[in-house]
Length: 230
Ligand code: CA
Image (tube, rainbow, N blue to C red):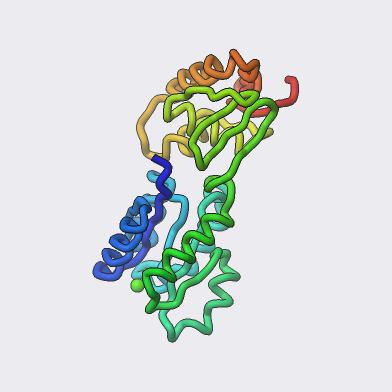
């Protein structure tokens, strides 16, 4: 349920499949892209936690792709690890300049690959194992549960993801469209009022704990998570 999702961006199919095999054996969910155009579609649609980006891609370079992703605030939670060939190692500094969280030189051992991914995901924080606290609420991302004043609250999977997004992005107003993109994934064709339905369910689940007013409606704009009074 809480398996981390990793996007593998590599044009060479045997390498891509080998990495996908290693990562799924290590317990990760994997998705694949052959070039940066596919990578951006996959990122928008499937919201991976981490992207492994090969330096040499057929359309634009992995470095350029990394720069684009790191400039986009929609993808602030996405960790990026660049893959470079030995000959390109002198470029590692510019790889990190481009905003990559780490880089791995090919060829690499399976153990090294998995260890580096674990380390980056741990550092990436917000969406990996941690406890987020706001007012009476505690969201335990490792245990995938929500406590209100220490008592567990049962939430459906969508309400959980919605609350996780809101609690990790407090004090900002998100429109229904932005919430659909960030929680459901772009290009998922659901109506905007679906957001209202799930917000209503979430508030209902939080109401016994008196935390329903943490989710505030901002008229004409969207929703905001805040523990302060309106
Ligand atoms: Ca390549």
